[in-house]
Length: 242
Image 1: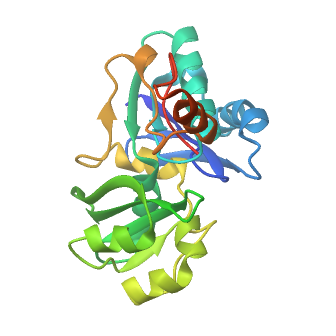
Image 2: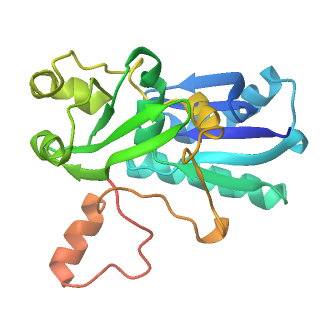
């Protein structure tokens, strides 16, 4: 079975992993929003630790957000660059919130909520039903206050993870009845993306990597200001994000 390279850069804590679907061989983490400088060295180190080269890869799986505008752009741009240089690799993707929730399902028997701080009083949030057979999306990833996320959820999750959950710990505790799990334990991990490759509805293929853009969650602040001022979409804008 071919190896996959996994890239997760949606939050302050970035990571890269190498392995087969459902099996992690190596993983490297980096933080402090150093994605631009640390991602490429992390890819090289993760391959070295796995005893592999780019020629051993069969594909890449990358988190598609929502999350940090800059982090997501760096992760996806790096994946696209590797695909251009090393032709024939497949590209698959999964929500970063799902990667965070999946990492938590081992210690939580029931639905898991994942929340990232989206600034301005909002979170990027989603709720998933998870087991080893597959993923059920109970609340799709979106940007809203914690109270609205809780209102949209058909069930109360047994745990909430992510920096957004930690930031709004009191609201989360009232919702779930349990303390939030913040980073690093509650952060998304590239290793979770590899595990999701082996799970039904865990990842989806990207048919045209050149046209692929992350799901930023909302407009970047600068873009929102420009569009409000001019009353029209920013020409050739690449997406939305924090």
